[in-house]
Image (cartoon, rainbow, N blue to C red; front, side):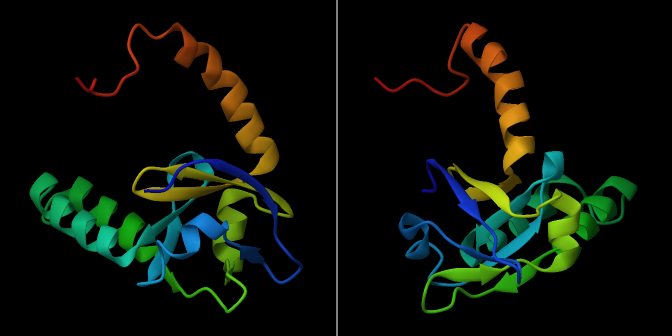
Length: 144
């Protein structure tokens, strides 16, 4: 499970050192891809397989929405492998999509992690905190 928020920096070659806690989780392979709200999603290969199966159940491939979702999701995926120091290289196309320059925040979101431009994340977090604090429930199942 990916949890926590980590302010980090990209180097001049677009490399990012993954949080130590995440490195073991992605040891079996991973992809990065375009995410909603102009961030990058990081997924394990097992999660990609789960999403593929779910997509087949959700939207038939012969619908416009199904084709668009599959193209945008799988078409933007890039398989990446962490080097011996735990760094991944984020391709220029994905850095451009998410507006990543130097300062980033890596955010754990259960079955994936997200990579945000630090300023964009700060603005999003500030906007959403008031909404979250005012919610009547946690928006998650309660455990007995």
